[in-house]
Amino acid sequence: MVKAYNGALILADVLVLILKILYYICESIYKFFVPAEEKSVAGEIVLITGTGHGIGKELALRYASLGATVVCWDLNQQANEETINEIKKTGTTAAYAYQCDVSKREDVLSVAEKVKREVGDVTILVNNAGIMPCHTLLDHTTDEIKRIFDINVLAHFWMLQAFLPSMIEKNHGHVVALSSLAGIGGFPNLVPYCASKFAVRGLMEALSEELRIGTKGKSLIKFTTIYPYMVDTGLCKKPKIKFEKILPLVSTQQAVSQIIRAQRTNQQEKTVPSFWLSTLTITRIFPDNVLRAVADFCDSGVEAVSS
Image 1 (cartoon, helix red, strand yellow):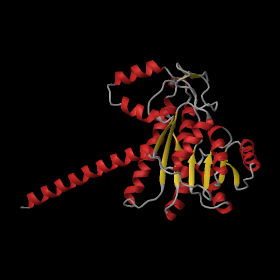
Image 2 (cartoon, rainbow, N blue to C red):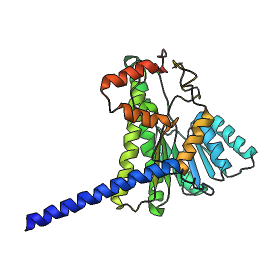
Image 3 (cartoon, rainbow, N blue to C red):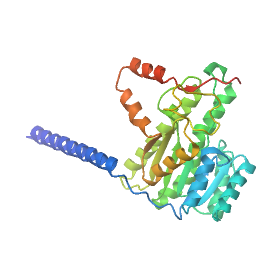
Image 4 (cartoon, rainbow, N blue to C red):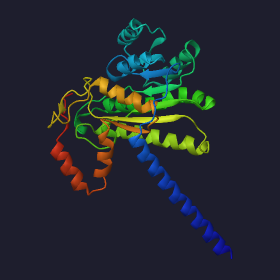
């Protein structure tokens, strides 16, 4: 009798699971054809790292134009101040610049306290700062490999330690992390960089699940991981592109538009351009040699740059 009862419970659980799967598939199809409305960021306090140039700078300008209070962090104080000045020229005064080396935990926690006192609790955190040395693995120095992980990975942990508690306390917030297509697939001449970006993907996925399960689904904090193709910011010193008209470098403006849209529509993962995520997911189904054949055909990536 007990066995029959337990069997019935398992069957019921399986049926519920099947119904949930069907529901979420239908929901996904619906969202594909009916895009989600973008939530407002007006009044939010947005902290962005690496705002002295490139994607970080454009993100700061764009969030400011949307009515958010923007907090800009960069190691280069002069470049960071220039970003703030550009924001203020548009008539937006709610913008603040702080010099910080995000690779140093003590520096992050110290500057974070200043931000809380002078601006308030950060509600949108964008971990954007990163470096991308392009060498073969054996040409990387020990210090260079350590610095890649200090900035591209460990800095995310220090930023989260500083700002996630207030989000959890208020049950309100959004964390955006810049990974890379190199965080989905491996590329030559970028071995430590790829490893660091794979780490960011794992960090974001695990943290999102930790909060979801820990709060029994009640957490309203959102997580978005971005995987850009090569963006024309100067970070890629020697890009290699076989089909330049089909797969050109992504402009900073295009990348930022998609990043902000992904955040405002609560997308958990987003490649830039969008088609890469489904393309790479599908190719993973096939044998490894198929993936290698596609990679050889596309022949895109970065050339090694001498140290």
